[in-house]
Amino acid sequence: MKELIIGSHVSYTQNEGLIGSVNEALSYNANTFMFYTGAPQNTLRAKIDENKTKEAQKIMKENNIDINDVIIHAPYIINLANNKDEEKYHFSINFLKEEIERAKTLGINKIILHPGSHIGLGEKEGLENIVKALNIILSEKEGPIICLETMAGKGSELGKTFEELKTILDGIKNKQRIQICLDTCHLNDAGYDLKDFDKLLHAFDKIIGIDKIGCIHINDSKNPKSSHKDRHENIGLGTIGFENLIKIIYHEKLKKVPKILETPYISAVKGGKDRTYPPYKFEIEMIKNKKYNENFQEDIRKCYKKF
Image (cartoon, rainbow, N blue to C red; front, side, top):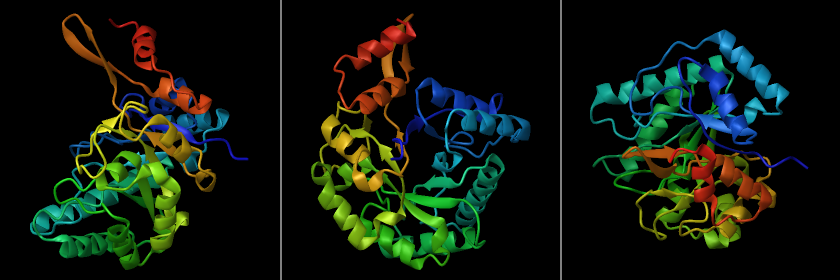
């Protein structure tokens, strides 16, 4: 039986490169991870050090991290749904192409992408723009897979329903390079009932197919179902609940799918300034034990000793 594939978002810096990302993941007792190759809000990207990348890949092998389970998240500034400004539209296409090349250099085979927001063009035209852009981006037969993320439906976001995602997938010519990333917070906020996950998964399988699930973002939600707000919460502290998330994480049909935590850092105060600490080591421990620790926030603060 394949071991649970669980990890979190980790940092990627110019100084440490992929080595720093791997070591951070290992410090959380994770066996996979997700990272941005640069700040998600801008285009600044440092040159990739291939020696550090090779060393990182060696560390992964030594620690049983399958590089095929490791994931890059595309920057937020990419929007393939709106082509009103042709220059910005082609910038998004070209920047995602560049991210794909960076993924190849790093040896990563999956890139998570927010489908985009139509910003007044309407859903039909927005979906057509996404399809058009992805067919340009995925023109090469081989290469990293794009995983379209399920969205909460905030503003004019597309990808908020399985039907919208199916429309995109149906229009993609190179289907072997397109998959879906389920996000539990986004699904909840979009209006899906995660308390009956079997029903949800059955609906997804009927519309798109379970074989198209390439990744799952594990997040609780600060908001009630159908809120369309997209505010992540630490597992067990939100409206989805720990037990429901455990059922999703350990679902029999999703064993081979990497699960990634994107939950908020835990806050504390030191020297009059707010500081935040990563919760992932503690959340992964709870997930592996299948037991909720009501004091995990306090345990995090004690662990980092930064009061």
